Length: 370
Image (cartoon, rainbow, N blue to C red; front, side, top):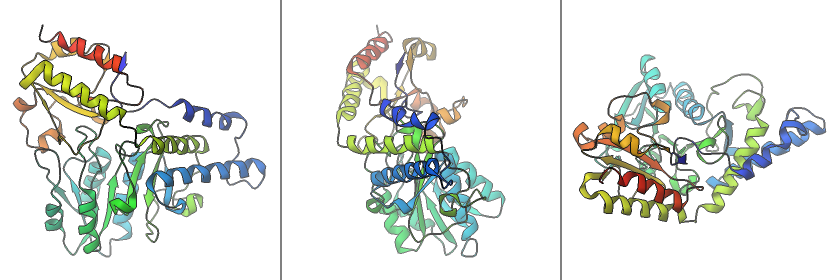
């Protein structure tokens, strides 16, 4: 099996697994305990927190550990909605967000909040001017993903942040797909909240983080004891937090490595040479993640494509809602028709993808035209 579905999830990196092992057996203490076992666990958590902060170029105090991207996104939307209800009840997001943004927004709509869903252009990008036009005196939050999981299109977060700052509105970005692939300096981006999902950057599933800019206080999503400085109750997941910290440290060191981008470009060029105008790339041609190709195969039988891709792990949609039998809502939001999209396959490469694997995939796909 050749794995080209890194946007769905990544394998745990060997160095990440190795740093986690001692906490299964030897260093199993509760960080809240005052004895040596507890002190080791507490120090481990704070060391991991610093590593997460480093990849975002921020402070240790601004990192909150969560169970993953969905919890981080729910925390921002529901907690900001509750905390700032006296200021207003209007939230702005985009039409192509992950379900962990869209579904909490629908929940909030049922509870008296007004949500504006900003459209995207044909490349899947938001026009910052649309955000500006949607702002009202009741707007309390803008939430726009950094990069789309299906197409890889990167949003103009810096431009959106300028608009939000000028209007005194909080800005959140879901960076689950972008952290570790492209720079995510929160000061450069200008965001107030940023979501990290561990399993998208070679850490385990079930761990994530949320950046909250210092000075912002929101009601916790999970109430209980005073864990995470009172921002999220629950005994710290020391094992997975150590893993996420290691993954972030590793990812930061590899941000300047262009090998995945080069292999993705080579793959797409070969597909163009092979299929010509019978394929199209969905998403922005330049402002996209370096590892992602969303390709429409036009005029081919679905069974033939499935047979050609037998033994290759790819996605025809998003793993979070893979039971969809209709056209992708993201591509639909981009204004593409069912006829235009044809059979859509998302190829997402990762650090373990080899040139030989790409050559094997190309050989298999060549059977469609021979």
